[in-house]
Image (cartoon, rainbow, N blue to C red; front, side, top):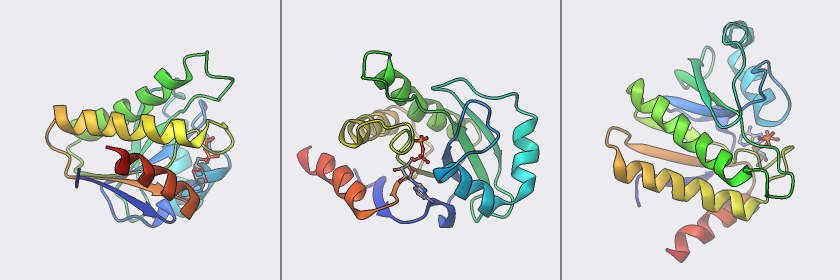
Length: 169
Ligand code: ADP
């Protein structure tokens, strides 16, 4: 599906309507992609996040993008992998759906996702990439208004994992 593109790089550099942040429940910043987004956006982002009252796992909230090229940041909280029988798959799928629904509601047409939960939260990469792509594809089939979704992989190994799913279809 040509509305989905897999790219390797730094999500903070993406020139899109919204980048998605793999945030913590507090929404008050952290390491990994969350830290990189806050550093690139500047302190105003944290100020706005403080007003949001946190976010439940699997849900999403939206802020401005401040110093980022992206005009908005959609913050979603992925599940911490703990073996697979604690609704991890369902919660990860919900992150993608909630983020895309929020983008649609705000009329944002181009969105970039990182590999949510695949860092410190230790979700198995291949399994997470399959969930990500299938949720994005289903959403784009069911709703119109989003032109492009980028899956931004920090390294080439992760990009290959994503690409292997697209090849299989
Ligand atoms: P989580 O806590 O949800 O696991 P992490 O930030 O630890 O979130 O990792 C999620 C994914 O984001 C990992 O695959 C990691 O390599 C990737 N990542 C880290 N920094 C960036 C960045 N600047 N741009 C894109 N992806 C990134």
